[in-house]
Image 1: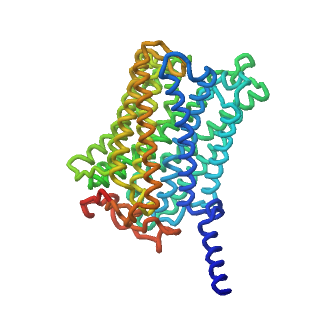
Image 2: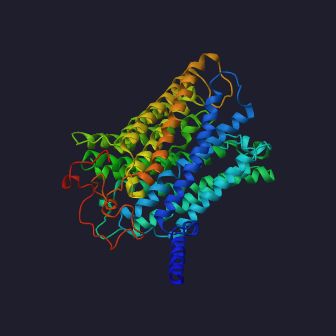
Image 3: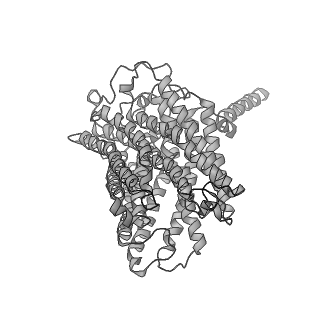
Length: 543
């Protein structure tokens, strides 16, 4: 009896060490940290989604009959800040990038495992500060913190919101630095730059933006706090400041931040399209160069957000032209995805449906981006719902579709379980329909002149707003479904094989889920990227 008791006690201590909460909070395993990120950003996704729901319910009727005007201002501000800084930016890099990059390049972990854990803690601390801001009454400046709204009004919690994003920004910087060093220094023998998966290339380009751009945002928010606390003349013209300076600083980061959100999604779609088309990716080198070009050109177009803010006509023309240039590498990627699918053996599995959705919605968002890059049209649609629709077609229609596509593609590897294919396909279609019903009417609303961020609106806009709110309801159902069946699959789903999609990358050559060190021995890469012509051509579906 005593021996048995001792054995059980030792086993309990072992399980607590391996699976207890302490083991998670102090882990340096990149896969566990990715799961911590997954839990964190999912939490903030639903907070931001709740604010969006309140906004759409308010806009069901022309009168402001659900929320007070000040409360409505706080709703769209907190929706934007939570979604952008605590979901969209960290989603693909922090979750899928953390989990997959070391495995894809044949490494056992990231270069700095403890820094990786610190990055999650910084995001969590920033998130707690944001929750504190919300519970304390929120902030009503808009997610952009434009001055003088953020510097001269004392009845809003700007400083704590800015501090939350300031802290979360360091999480982004450290993650980007970790990825850059890992990709440069820890690739397996034979994993040359020309054999890197495009998902790795996309996160590499994203990391460059994170390291170079995020400090500018941090400095901008710090200056807002300093002016607010000490009444310094940084942005206040009465004290010798420049009110446009903040916009230049903010958008110098925040336009490249669009690519922090979308570039990793492009990498996800590249992996899905080539796998489910059973073909090598068309124009691999151009695809890799395109993501680097997007990262570089993204730093040169920030002032197209300021065409009506008072910049010179000459500067506006230059930035308009540069904005057209940045569309070229994005167009290359859309063309190459289409060419990859041409005459491919396409399987309409759930990840591929999300990839189709991404390509269609991202293309729509990109084309309407050319509208707002044109000076004459931008003057008409600035600060209308046209801009809201354009932004969401890129960020929600593009990035979130890619994120969900990636989660479905790699979920068997992450969890070791298969999800129900029927429900996966249904959710993808519901999301696509709900998204278009939500945001396409907003293009029309903006073109007709309905301004954004208004608590009330003219009665002639009500029908389109009702359609948009109905679409948001459908979209919410679509977003809720994957969370439910992913949780269900962890207990009841079929055990996933090592390679359920007959994929070509290194991540499909190890167990599902991976062991702690990923590989029993360091792999030797002797094949070219995406060698689907050498692999089985059938993709198992309906598992």
